Length: 290
Ligand SMILES: NC(=O)c1ccc[n+]([C@@H]2O[C@H](COP(=O)([O-])OP(=O)(O)OC[C@H]3O[C@@H](n4cnc5c(N)ncnc54)[C@H](OP(=O)(O)O)[C@@H]3O)[C@@H](O)[C@H]2O)c1
Picture (cartoon, helix red, strand yellow):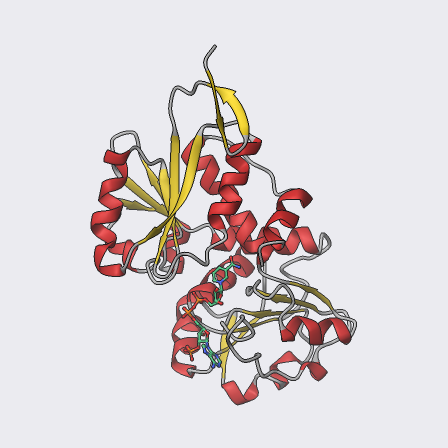
């Protein structure tokens, strides 16, 4: 049998070279290529997952080129997730509710299907970090009202949340998301964010505050009950100032890396029909790049 080496692994001569990637602008910061190429190697596959620098104005042409190039699909990141809604041929229910597409799959007939796996990734990450976590454990406070907040709110509702307090710097954005999401989500003013933590079972930061290069999220945790869980969707740095503050108060905390890792699993199912695992080895490999 023919054999060839790829990513340091020797594998049988492939019938097909598998292709997928991530489109965004900028794109070179993305850890997705490292994550997906790890799985390619672990599964002994011949294939590659590539970073694709695609400004919004070129998204339509880039997505429509995927079938001709033999791509199984791609992920989308900032600022393309919302724009893709007007380009693909079909959209799943979750992406439609969230209003953003994180994963595109090329179907056998060359049509493009859009899904959003961020919500799944967030819920799986919480369950992995806190196996006893339940969506209906008590009020959840979500800080932010952008794309990540929409995915998190959707995940919490899916997991049975009964009360979500949504706080955003720009109140109108929180109010719009709350109106869309239904009666169990209430929008609160930015200056009420500290008091909103009273009696909360879960706090989630979905803003970009605390990310490398940005100032910390200004939030006093003193009103959070001792048994609360704190989650940050940011994962660079691995411990944001918010998570550090939570840890020093003895609260259980998790960063956004699990969300990134777990949202990638359904993408593989849909592109390649495989169900890769999030393992400690994979997590350590990505953490080493942060
Ligand atoms: N872990 C993962 O897998 C994952 C997935 C998706 C996103 N993320 C991360 O989530 C973060 C947000 O992404 P996104 O797509 O939701 O972005 P986005 O749609 O642009 O939303 C940004 C949010 O941050 C808030 N914000 C920005 N600057 C602020 C400031 N100075 N003070 C207070 N709030 C501020 C915005 O409030 P306004 O409405 O007032 O502007 C908005 O709520 C990013 O760091 C991104 O990397 C992580």
